[in-house]
Image (cartoon, helix red, strand yellow):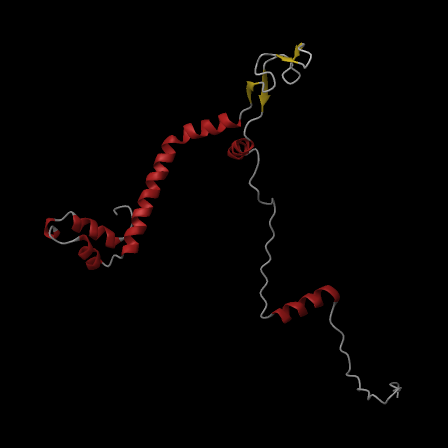
Length: 178
């Protein structure tokens, strides 16, 4: 409560430690100082988050070392020959293992996610954001206005078309040049 920065919580803290309020319930004190249950929950959540950050920070060097260790390639026992360096064929002949080439071990790459984390921490690779981001904030009153503006910019001003006289079903030819 003391690290919250809220004056109401400061007063509650002082009242909880004051002998004058010894017989007053915490709920009554909260109402007296205008503190809701939500305020108490928020303070408790923030307090626990800070404790978690402190704990994580204390153990961060070991966590980072584990991530680096997981990112490293390592030698493991060959799965084909079980480290015996030879395999037996169907005719019971023994030959050098084709997977490990008689070494008994094979090299496996480190965890790709751990490798990516190490590279990002070192600044070798960046985040998955574009190098250049262009934001265009254009404000239009309506969709129609935006379409008119787009048409104007793309193909120029729309031509004004004079209204054409309507034809009747019996009219076959209308001389418009007259």
